[in-house]
Length: 112
Image (cartoon, rainbow, N blue to C red; front, side):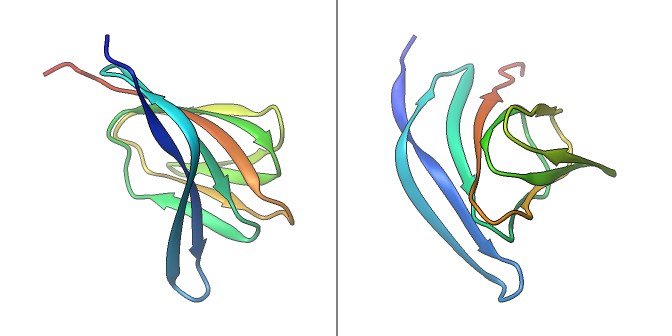
Protein backbone atom coordinates (compact mmCIF):
# COMPACT_ATOMS: atom_id res chain seq x y z
CA UNK A 1 0.00 0.00 0.00
CA UNK A 2 1.41 3.39 -0.99
CA UNK A 3 1.29 6.06 1.71
CA UNK A 4 2.24 9.69 1.13
CA UNK A 5 2.11 12.80 3.30
CA UNK A 6 -0.50 15.45 2.63
CA UNK A 7 -0.94 18.93 3.97
CA UNK A 8 -3.41 19.68 6.69
CA UNK A 9 -5.70 22.56 5.86
CA UNK A 10 -6.79 25.58 7.83
CA UNK A 11 -10.10 26.88 6.52
CA UNK A 12 -10.50 30.63 6.91
CA UNK A 13 -13.79 31.66 5.35
CA UNK A 14 -15.08 35.05 6.36
CA UNK A 15 -18.84 34.75 5.94
CA UNK A 16 -19.60 38.45 6.52
CA UNK A 17 -17.13 39.71 3.93
CA UNK A 18 -17.63 36.79 1.53
CA UNK A 19 -13.89 36.15 1.16
CA UNK A 20 -12.15 32.81 1.43
CA UNK A 21 -8.51 32.02 2.27
CA UNK A 22 -6.76 28.67 2.62
CA UNK A 23 -3.57 27.99 4.59
CA UNK A 24 -1.60 24.75 4.50
CA UNK A 25 0.58 23.30 7.24
CA UNK A 26 1.46 20.01 8.94
CA UNK A 27 1.20 16.45 7.71
CA UNK A 28 -1.58 13.97 7.08
CA UNK A 29 -1.83 10.51 5.56
CA UNK A 30 -3.41 9.52 2.28
CA UNK A 31 -3.93 5.99 0.95
CA UNK A 32 -6.34 4.45 -1.53
CA UNK A 33 -8.72 3.68 1.38
CA UNK A 34 -8.55 6.73 3.68
CA UNK A 35 -7.11 10.21 4.16
CA UNK A 36 -6.41 12.17 7.34
CA UNK A 37 -6.21 15.92 7.86
CA UNK A 38 -6.09 18.46 10.66
CA UNK A 39 -8.59 21.27 10.14
CA UNK A 40 -8.60 24.58 12.03
CA UNK A 41 -11.63 26.83 11.70
CA UNK A 42 -10.87 30.38 12.95
CA UNK A 43 -13.18 32.08 15.49
CA UNK A 44 -16.55 33.26 14.12
CA UNK A 45 -16.03 31.44 10.79
CA UNK A 46 -17.58 28.45 9.07
CA UNK A 47 -16.30 25.52 7.01
CA UNK A 48 -18.99 24.65 4.54
CA UNK A 49 -19.17 21.89 1.99
CA UNK A 50 -22.30 21.39 -0.05
CA UNK A 51 -22.21 17.60 -0.03
CA UNK A 52 -19.79 14.84 0.98
CA UNK A 53 -18.64 12.25 -1.52
CA UNK A 54 -17.28 9.79 1.04
CA UNK A 55 -17.96 9.12 4.73
CA UNK A 56 -16.05 11.52 7.01
CA UNK A 57 -15.20 11.14 10.71
CA UNK A 58 -14.17 14.13 12.86
CA UNK A 59 -12.56 14.37 16.33
CA UNK A 60 -12.51 17.76 18.08
CA UNK A 61 -9.03 18.50 19.52
CA UNK A 62 -9.75 21.99 20.86
CA UNK A 63 -12.19 24.86 20.67
CA UNK A 64 -15.97 25.05 20.58
CA UNK A 65 -18.54 25.34 17.82
CA UNK A 66 -21.36 23.47 16.18
CA UNK A 67 -21.91 21.06 13.33
CA UNK A 68 -24.99 20.91 11.15
CA UNK A 69 -25.54 17.54 9.46
CA UNK A 70 -28.51 17.65 7.15
CA UNK A 71 -31.16 19.43 9.25
CA UNK A 72 -29.72 18.47 12.67
CA UNK A 73 -27.33 20.64 14.69
CA UNK A 74 -25.01 19.55 17.53
CA UNK A 75 -22.64 21.48 19.82
CA UNK A 76 -18.91 20.75 19.55
CA UNK A 77 -16.21 20.88 22.23
CA UNK A 78 -12.92 19.11 22.96
CA UNK A 79 -13.42 15.35 22.92
CA UNK A 80 -16.51 15.41 20.70
CA UNK A 81 -16.49 13.08 17.71
CA UNK A 82 -19.00 12.70 14.89
CA UNK A 83 -19.32 11.29 11.40
CA UNK A 84 -20.87 12.52 8.19
CA UNK A 85 -22.42 9.83 5.95
CA UNK A 86 -21.53 9.93 2.26
CA UNK A 87 -23.69 12.14 0.05
CA UNK A 88 -24.75 14.32 3.01
CA UNK A 89 -24.80 18.11 3.38
CA UNK A 90 -22.95 19.54 6.39
CA UNK A 91 -21.22 22.61 7.81
CA UNK A 92 -18.93 23.24 10.80
CA UNK A 93 -19.10 26.61 12.56
CA UNK A 94 -16.71 28.06 15.13
CA UNK A 95 -18.73 30.31 17.43
CA UNK A 96 -15.92 30.53 20.00
CA UNK A 97 -12.99 32.89 20.56
CA UNK A 98 -10.17 30.42 19.69
CA UNK A 99 -9.55 28.15 16.70
CA UNK A 100 -11.80 25.09 16.47
CA UNK A 101 -9.29 22.30 15.69
CA UNK A 102 -10.51 18.96 14.34
CA UNK A 103 -8.88 15.79 13.05
CA UNK A 104 -10.65 14.43 9.99
CA UNK A 105 -10.62 10.88 8.63
CA UNK A 106 -12.05 10.55 5.13
CA UNK A 107 -13.06 6.94 4.35
CA UNK A 108 -12.80 6.48 0.60
CA UNK A 109 -15.42 4.24 -0.99
CA UNK A 110 -13.62 2.37 -3.76
CA UNK A 111 -16.75 0.47 -4.85
CA UNK A 112 -17.40 1.08 -8.53
